[in-house]
Image 1 (cartoon, rainbow, N blue to C red):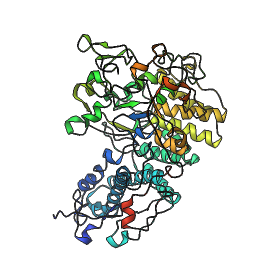
Image 2 (image 1 turned 180 degrees about the horizontal axis):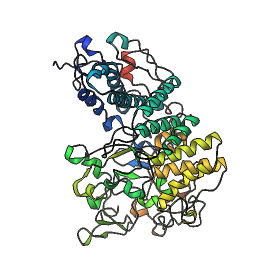
Image 3 (image 1 turned 90 degrees about the vertical axis):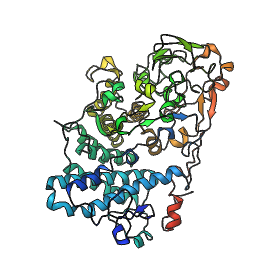
Length: 559
């Protein structure tokens, strides 16, 4: 078989390459491929890659900061049509769409030697995958070209953007087909797209597009699944994100990774999240805003609760705080984590002795600038090998519960089922049953405005570091507020008032949960400035290279 590079035009891999005597280097020619079940499965399996499934980068939000990158295009307002992130996002989505279109146009070649139920299932998987790519596109770019069949070279010159509402209808239709034709489970621990995955993607897409009825119905359908392949919350919040939680019944979609198969993150990407004492760099870190978002155990935000103390900020807090951010003066990855400027040595349980404290900026100038480190999803193997091969969670059951709650609140349909959905997530955080309201801060209010605030705060702390915060800021129109405030760090050691360690006072939070640190003056340090242009950044720009090839692809406003 000839291997000749296929042309990319207007971001589409030309799936009818046989007509042009061109073949994508990663695919067989459509003239000879898709002829049997094995080839169909290869085509589908190739799209189960993290490049095509990852949620948004948490660094696009007010939860996360990377010291090594003084700015990213989203949070520092530099995004433009030449941006590599924008280009790659667009290209990856349309690469998948083109491959899906090719598969769907050619799969009947294998009908004679492929069981009908297998053919139907593979079709449903591919249609779900294609719909998911369109969901990613319209939530980030708005109107985009809707292409549902292979294109020839000349056709690509005249492609135009399709109204996102029309594309959304297409997405829902495709996901409905997938939900009807995919099994609830494959058994034997096999991780493939299921009925629940189709319904879950529909629920998320609908929520992001403010289609409350569809979001409510799809999330409720996931909640109502019974028997094998149904979902429930993992009993231990912390363990869910580790290797031990990879087979949890909470996970709806995850992308497997395995070091032995050379599918893993390694090196700097891992070390950036580790303490310096454990061989890391403390560079990718939680923000102070992230920490301040966690409520106290009375269910009140820190600026309303009498239980909160800025000099003992981990005490009396939602247990998800210490599951997400490393608590001061606790053992972590073999070393006591204590960023206090006077803690020049710490005890290492790994070495069974006191060692120089490289996580204090008095010892190491580039220790965590916020004083905070991520704990969620990190385990000892990261520090031992500088490798992360835990599965990547894309969608889980807790999201369906909070989607159902949010959609119902927006529809004005607040009843006991809405409170139960929120409280199930809250109760799990405390390690108790939802039926034990005295053991956790159960939500009882039915006031819509108050419930809206609770659900939004719940989403932030439940899904921290999972890539959902960015689209929440976009759809709630909060990015113009949250992403125009500076990243706050601890003062330099020489300027740190020890009586105000670690935080100088109670952080004021507005009704949207956005923190204001201006009141603290020099008791905090601005480590980076953010910028977000509300006149354009609620949508990403159409990549310039696509417009240069096809001027009919009009740019988004103000790009």
